[in-house]
Image (cartoon, rainbow, N blue to C red):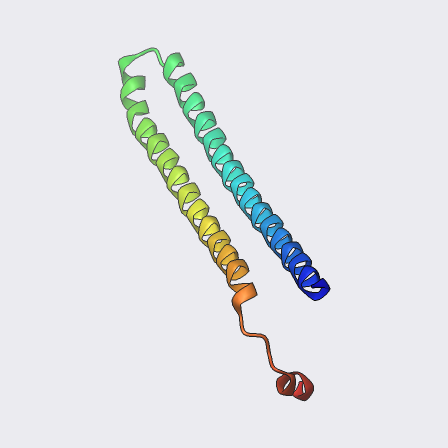
Length: 120
């Protein structure tokens, strides 16, 4: 009966350690993704605010026509930053998913038998 209790205790500790690692991986991923998206938002906001500053100081019709291509470029750059951040977030989430999958597979992986251990 004591051996069963020891096995149960060992399995419980392994499960708790795996759950702790899974939580840590998930939180690290969320933190990285949030930081990346926040940086992209900050860059987009700064670029847009700069453009609106130029737009508000433009007085003549000629200035407004000259600023139109710049406004389109700012919008394009903002979209590219957003798309890049989304792709990087997807990549990080994919890596985290792979790590979580490996963590879940680990307890079920076949243990090397004694003959393989002694030859290594």
